Amino acid sequence: MRFSGYIAQWRSAAKEALDRTGITVNFLCWLHFTSNYLCSPVHAYGVSMLPTLNVTGDILLADHLSPLLGNVGHGDLVLVRSPLNPKIRLTKRVVAVEGDTVTYFDPLHSEASQVAVVPKGHVWIQGDNIYASRDSRHFGPVPYGLIEGKVFFRVWPPSSFGLLDQ
Image (cartoon, rainbow, N blue to C red; front, top):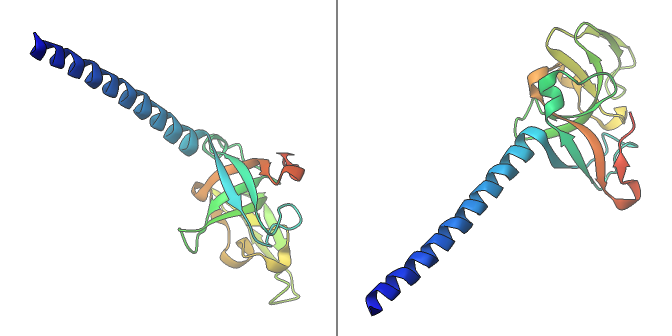
């Protein structure tokens, strides 16, 4: 009788452990799906997006569905995997999409303007602060596949909380 009591107690503890493990696994799957395919927080810092974003850093929300659905256009802030260093993610503004002609100049290297046509499947991105931004003026049009998200909301700092204007 005593032995069967221990087995029943063990079964009860094992069942509870399995139930809690199942709940934890479901939560982690939901978290993975949400952050990789729907929406995720992003820390963006640096001077390239002044005055839109703060130098010390902003916490932003990026929508990952828009690039997959082709819903990225002129003026949108996007999260892009750097074409020069894939370990780095950039936050820049879409200036032109495929088929557009872009006239630009690099104020640090030349006073002359240059013209480029954005090829099919690419976008032209630039930082809002043209004097301190490495963008399409330096590495050319960016393949659409490198766009990881469309930034739409600022979470931090609290004084700037809300939707980002274009």
